[in-house]
Image (cartoon, rainbow over all chains, first blue to last red; front, side, top):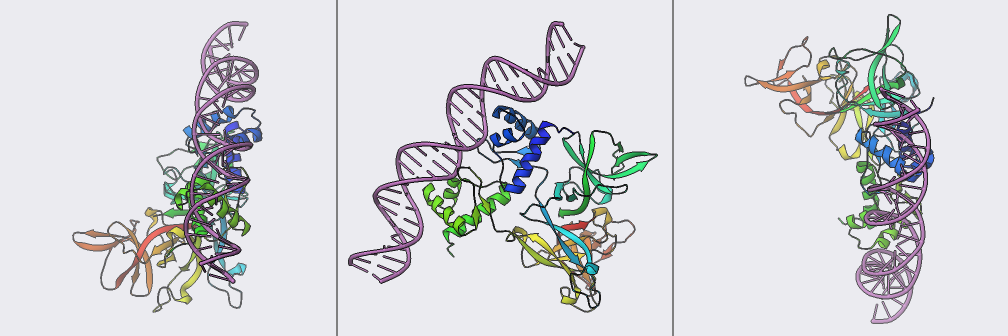
Length: 196
Length: 196
DNA sequence: CATAAATTAGAACAAATGTTCGAAAAAAAA
DNA sequence: TTTTTTTTCGAACATTTGTTCTAATTTATG
């Protein structure tokens, strides 16, 4: 599958920030995505900024920041009731995991800031931050993250109705959306964070 | 208390990266820590790099990265069901730990595992973990944690109706509960975690 | 096919940045 | 005090970088 140029750029910026710790320069982007002119990259960057996917400071090198994917995460276990005689962190005592921001990049986890109230009835509010596992493909009944038209990330239920697969919001004011080639699964939503 | 210059620089770099998303320039550092020459900052940066606290790419603007990993997060205890008669934060009630960003951290934070669905319409589900600030007394309209009869911790809206104060669930299947001497406020709910 | 739109390229420029050097100032050590 | 070390300064320089313009090229559209 050939990626959209802007998506390619966006992913490289995110990759670079997460792995190197700082934003790439325009020329580094140009080399990576096989563009021979900085102005071409410049053009795409302005487009991404207009879409609200990127931010940057004018005339300041390496100040690109991604607006949607806020940070990388690391998971730590939560321990519940302790089974007699077992160590505190034994697998049987683990009642779940919680994800916390961490400077070190984890390959499969990232976080997405939820936009809108289409998942309100699932207790996912506008502005919430959901943690997504890229290594887990959402199955029927799961809440997953999906990329629409290579430009927009959305969080929805996934399910099959009458043999067709749909993205299903948890809000009666929104409609189901049949899955087609423009919708690509990103991963499964595994946890949620909210500031109140 | 006067901070060591290098510590001051290190903290500013970390602050800038965490809040702006990119490294400061040498001149920005100079201005922040009151040094009038870029070479002075340069000298300190090399020192910090020698100590292994910083990394950077030569001749590349804004490529400073901090090698310190865990400093920006601290852990607070999670409590579950409260054993009768025992204080809220007694060791026997602790079921785990959760990490919170340092800028939000204070000694008054702890976490509570939510029991039941009385706050469903506020997007707080059974099993969610809410972080509570003991130092902030919940006001009208806030979501707070309250201790009932010294045995049970609950999370509810707080509000005044006709001059009387009530704990108000976010679920029509539950009733308001007038506040009396058996109900003590614990603190304000400031954030929420969920495993999905 | 012709036309319009989007994408890419090239070159040049101004601005911001990292680096280096010597010397002054301040602080510490003797 | 004197000496040494550390810290700070100032200026200059080379490099990297973002930006802007026009034109070429490709892709879509009729």
